[in-house]
Image 1 (cartoon, rainbow, N blue to C red):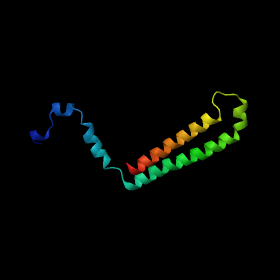
Image 2: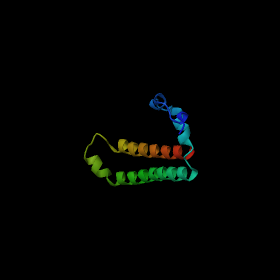
Image 3: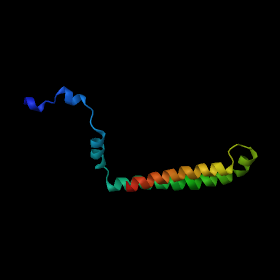
Image 4: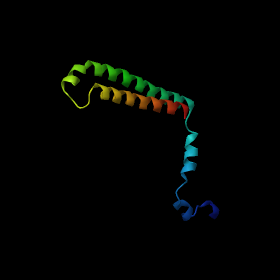
Length: 96
């Protein structure tokens, strides 16, 4: 092994630049990986919205009888917000 092949300690001590690492990592994402990942997030968004609203309607009488600070509107908004967040992640994964 030649002396020039051995990296110096000062070179090894420096952290790599974040921009360079992100450029290297960007090339590893294949199309099928993005389709599967994005589809999983979109499917999860749809499922959480539909099942959440269904369970909310089934428990409406109990929620209103409990006189909780969080009524039907805020719970429905939370389910919708969660589903929209998951849908955004799915679209981001598909088209990034």
